[in-house]
Image 1 (cartoon, rainbow, N blue to C red):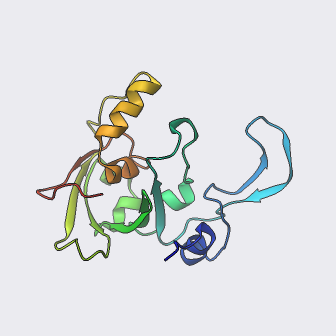
Image 2 (cartoon, rainbow, N blue to C red; image 1 turned 90 degrees about the vertical axis):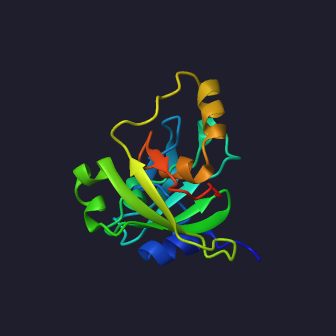
Length: 171
């Protein structure tokens, strides 16, 4: 079975079938050259967000999800971690509207897989954070030690300390 395209995922989340994850329109390439036509991204905040992590990507060229998808109107995110889809959510609606709530919060994670026999409850703290590696090599080594779902979560909350509350990290 094939995975859905990013265009289909964006259509379901935002109502727009763009294959891109950035905010707004890109008019220039990475080198500052004018593009032949604008590259259309996500135009407005969606009701449900999207988070992405793929350990196989070059660390210097990681897929970046724009804030329109990272900060949805509701604290619900479809996630794609190393090709596996899941759903992250919080029961606290203020998580996406009050930055103070982002200091310490709880999220639930579901994959829909038969192997997930009980809910995965994650406690996340962003105040203390993890030390930031100084070099690219240290960053790659650190990323390899961290469970992929935590790396995905850290694309929104950099340095977050994630507790799995008795669940063995499986994603």
